[in-house]
Length: 276
Image 1: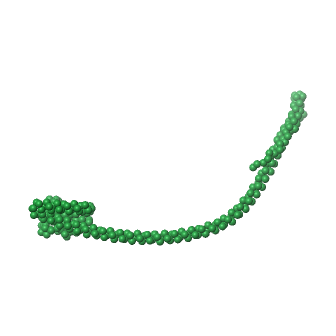
Image 2: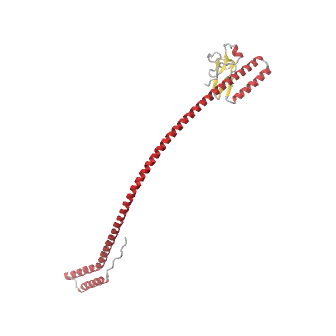
Image 3: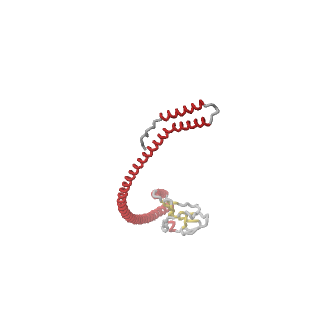
């Protein structure tokens, strides 16, 4: 808040009067003889008091003038602020009317947005149901294709195992013939067949005479379970595993068991490969 500087009271008359009073008081004290009487003390006290009052009077007047000027400036500033408040009140009223219009527009916008959101939610739900149905159909199709592939794989394995059984029977027949060239040729042929099937994960397993019967690896021709420690006397048909999974155990003859003539001369075709 800015206000003008108040007019200053001339101080030299008061200071001059103050000096005169102090000189008179000093003169009285100088010419009076101790002990001082009540008249001398009273006169000096009165003169000192008057001198003090005269000395501070111009400063009190300046202070009062400054206070009055400050009050006038504060009053003017208050009136100006009141005027500004009236202007602000008018602006607030105008803004309130405009805000009501904005509220109405906002309400319409919110209603439109809610309607749009509801439509989007409905479209999303419909699209999600479509995707779910399409995914189920795709899964069903893939499941059917997988079953077809598995059946085809099983059929292929059955055919390959059946051919390998015939190759093994042919090799065994060559061994029984005792003709070394024939045995060598049949051995090479069987080795080539086993190498080809090994590349697709189909592995043949042989048993040798003198091996201990293991029910996890061997099975007898008639399906009986021999006593522990029974020795294998002959490998009738190979066992097979596919990609680490067992398909069929090795068919063997054991001690004290007669070998059927059909099993000794023909491949075992009654055992169907089955993953365990």
